[in-house]
Image (tube, rainbow, N blue to C red; front, side):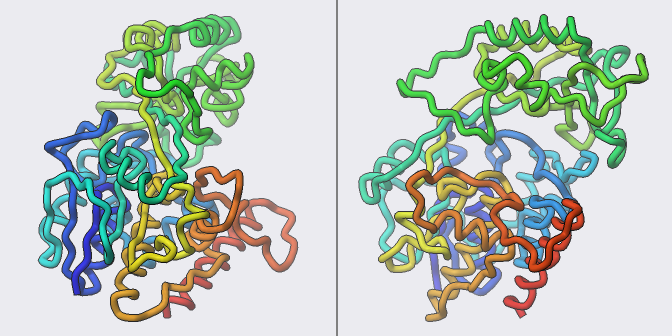
Length: 428
């Protein structure tokens, strides 16, 4: 048996891995390093281009539940994350270069995977997983949309990264919200006057031009901080600058607002500004973000950038196994299907790979229970919806528990354990 996978991002690597681990000979096509999208910088596979966080670890959370399901399905992403994790409180964050290197080595050394470094521009006939991502090359995107039509376009943004030793720790402090986990975040506290000065600079700063497209549609899950700020004076104070769960050791009180920075690498030499995806011009980023207490002399290793993401109108095109309706075993996986987030994309790749394997063996798709997170996401992208939008893992897409549980934390834990057990029963 043989199959093709197009794209060596998270979803493509998971699909190739799932197939090869089941004995299928896989050809994996990847256009890097010869050609990169505007957002990609690294030559390795499974490059993390936005944040280095894979979100919450606790099984009673949507993100933690999803990760546990992925482990049950033999996820390469979860294996790589376990080997390259950095401290991030209750979240799972990784050193992004180590993570990419780990996945790349695993894929390239697998005896059943052949990597072809070439851009694909022709639409495949059969037995293929297309996982070229929301940053699909223009040529292949035109091919896909010419064949399928019905794409949705959004813009996505990445946050800046600064060096740890350029942060003024006489103004910032180490802590996690509500003291959960270790003191894994650097927190930059604002009083009211400092916040108002920063806010006014943020909403009046000059943004970089977007030459490719006239219309700007921003996806809520990765919104530029300046776009969020323009929604109201307190919008960022209830978003990425919320001060809840923090106490400024200088005052003994909760700050008026706060910016958090999270480790970008295991050594703790680099930090990214959490939630500060942006499309400000580089000079404006240095000026405006320099108004954050503690970042007055910050050294930027990467400025925030903005790029286009494209998504299929999946409810019209895909079934719940991520297969193109009416095709001969053509599957899509990753963010282009409308699942939003690193782990969500990877999970869809696992499912697409497993289902292609099953199709090659004359079997039906894996019957994912709707109570598990991966099953709920698969249902989201395959259920008819005139207002379809990308969706990340969240408890709202899962069925309510059979009995009412008043405590939200206990209810989420019960829902997570139910879904995990249901998936376990299916796999057994």
